[in-house]
Length: 122
Image (cartoon, rainbow, N blue to C red):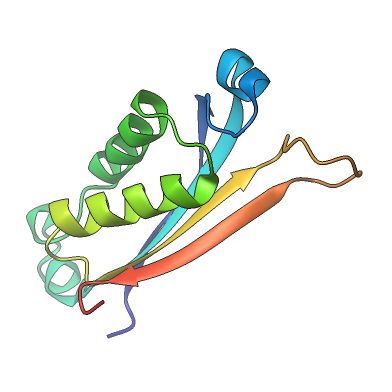
């Protein structure tokens, strides 16, 4: 199956990071999801109820990203992937990318990102 639903660069303002200042001040993060599922039945029937609600995906990501605190963005990515697979049974695999544009790295760069892929089969 090669169908996907993609949620691109949902912006979060959150307090993730190793440093005390990151916890205190917070910063912007961007979360992208690519969800693997079969959208053919929904597309053929033109039926919203046979697919995954984009707003529900965004709400879940926003809730995890803004109500929990993670020291590393790898932890945030794992939590989001696990929740997506637990709450959306049509999704068989998910790729989660977390971008941290203001990472406290002593070099000039546009940011850092972590990308993970998790599936129901492990």
